[in-house]
Image 1 (cartoon, rainbow, N blue to C red):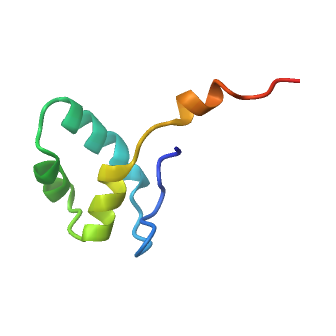
Image 2 (image 1 turned 45 degrees about the vertical axis):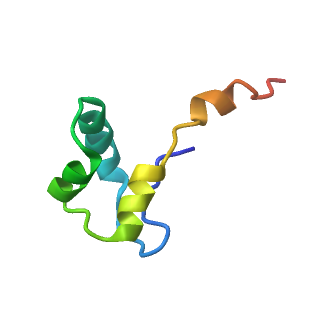
Image 3 (image 1 turned 120 degrees about the vertical axis):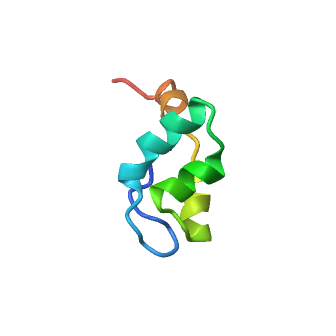
Length: 66
């Protein structure tokens, strides 16, 4: 839901790479090439960036307001 700051497995910082990754993939670049150019080599880090889904906007629809 929230952008992962670090890789869940190895702990490498990834939060600063999410915005460029998302922008370039939405522009039409292949995800593998984007990750290679960003220097993300480990499978665990690649998985963390590629598998992330932004659900925060959907979750906020169900926020309780008192």
